[in-house]
Length: 183
Length: 160
Image (cartoon, rainbow over all chains, first blue to last red):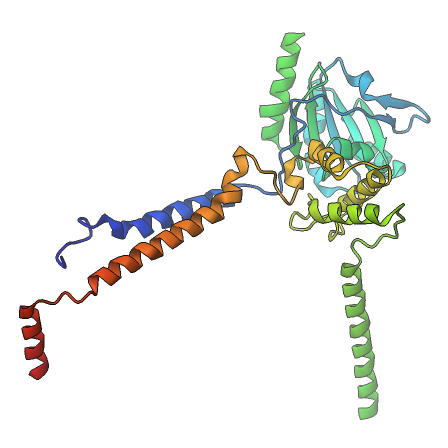
């Protein structure tokens, strides 16, 4: 009985195996970014809004007017530091022909205007969400956030936080190119 | 000279107390907007909802405890919906449609959440099973099973 060793009594290994399994779960958990909450809106029709257009007096724009063509909706604010990180990438995307609409979130019109003058304007239109109500409908919980909406008005992709070159290439440009081929 | 020092110290202490008071009163104030309700049921419904909905910005707080701007907005939206007579289910559905099930502190019971709900019970049963098996085995092993030869040997050892 006493002479039986490690290999004849594999029960000894059970705690070790359990430990490895638990450690594996923890290691995987560390890699998950809990601040990124997946949106339930992907694959659904983009929520409707009717909002005033920045610097256009009483002119408003509704999602009905946007639907029918591929567009990117970028939620931004002049007080948002992370928005500056992605701004050059947005300008670059717009120069490649990607139509980007801006949703100016809880901002002052003069600050938004100055921002666009100083850093360049990648938006074909900027709508003003003064109280953040439209942003709630779109499930926005932080700025910047970026949505890709296809020609059918369905949200195809959402990015939380500043866009990186990789996201611009892999997600936004590829969706844009695919939509160009379809039409 | 010494007198002057104590007054300075007193002033510093007063300042410190005032600061502490400010800091703690701010944190305690998260969800104390002055709100009017049509009935106490409505008020209760509102408070239950903001207790059960998660703030997506500071994810370990509910809407009631969070000072984040989004939490304020979502409290406001909850309040408006409560006032307009929406049921709690409708309000939770509204939030889930926008922010996903993550907004619920209490996840719904379904196939994908069985492990979450029943996992602890499974582990408890496993633990109980292990303890019972171990106990039964040790009791069997320590039973009075010494044969005559062994007794003899033990006695010999003790006598030496």
